Length: 248
Image 1: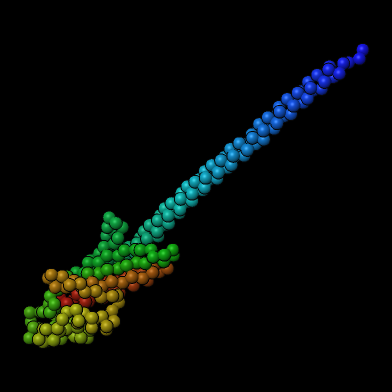
Image 2: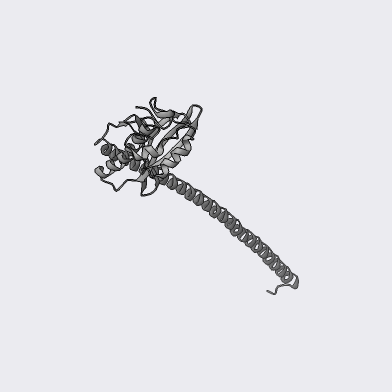
């Protein structure tokens, strides 16, 4: 049976329509498929950015915690080091004088009327200092304290004719003039220039002057006997200065 020309044309037209529909469907599928990876890449990018931010935040928190832990450890080490040195200083001083431990851990004592204190401070890792402070006298008049029997009122307590402490060359040099007009701070400065075990301090007050003797040194490697001897050299110097300044 022979197909008519009209039927052939209808068949060709139907085939063209089917192919066109298939091409359109394929194009739509391609667009849909092509669009999905873009959205996926965007989502993946956001996820990576979020993860990176989270990681950085976590790293920052870890670093802060590590720093805080290190600071706490350093603080604990410093407290331990200073406490150990003060314990050592207490044992060394108790060979010679009575020592009390204050609430803050510092040591306090009295020697021949001179009150004093010992503290410890860590300046750097491995460098811990003992600081000894003796209060030689307080509210001392600018002209110094005169002994009642001194000639012309000159010199300090215990002096003979204004000549300072009897039998003490340093006391004689420390004594004021017969006129009693010398400034106490200037004379103390001269006394310090003669050589003292420690640093002499003079603080003006409304009633006169406060006089102190200070000495700071690294003491970690000293044995108890040597440490006690060194501390007592400073304390004895402070007591000697007091005897030159004040009446018996």
